[in-house]
Length: 295
Image 1 (spheres, helix red, strand yellow):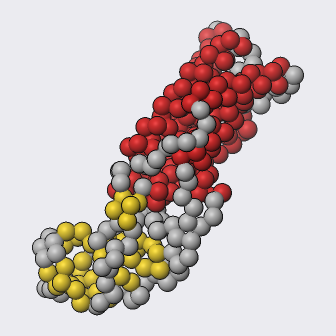
Image 2 (cartoon, rainbow, N blue to C red):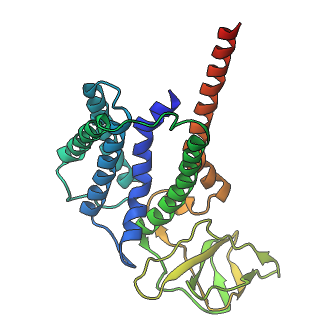
Image 3 (cartoon, rainbow, N blue to C red):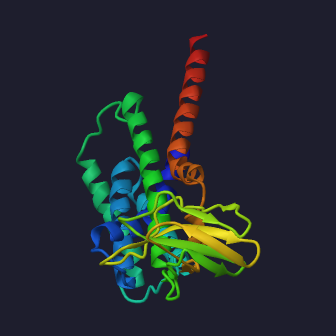
């Protein structure tokens, strides 16, 4: 049951996570997608999912496969709108007609179903070591997708990265609040020490995932941020850096880039862990049933 639910709903989460990652990896440096690019990529992922679901569930009645694909495609469409309104606030205008975002995955499911009837599934393909390889790949892919989504999504949602008044001075009078340390991507300081007016060391917190201005020339990276409880003079011993206000990132991903790596890994690995749990539960149930029959 867990595997089936994961198949029909899990692809939606995977498509949402992988859409920005795919666009970022396939574009040039500094690429900022338009709404049509996002819709097209999201639809392609949905069609691929439809093909795979139709093929995997060819033993079901075709009408049920197509109906479930249509429902999941509609859920995916709504999820895309929500993600790019609240998590990665970007304009989604343009692109494919809305009806095609739902219809094309259903067509893909029909094609996958038809192809599946022509192919005989090898016995034991989803058991033993092969299945655990799938589980491991799902877990690793989930971690890659989650960290990539946070990184790319934060870059897309950034309205302003390096502030115009950023300073390279080694002594600064700063207001209370949060401040940022910026560096050139290929020339980051090591170490970076900031000292307050009483000689105490100020903690510089670095992002868990790499966060840059996504420039097509000299790339600037957010090296870290630090907080001052009160206005005071600080000494900056961070060679080749600039100090300024933090990037202006719309949505929650500006905070997510600082989440502990263990949290991001746990979220990404969750689908693989659920598959493993479902497989173990099914194996335990089958073993118990076999024991009862043997009595």
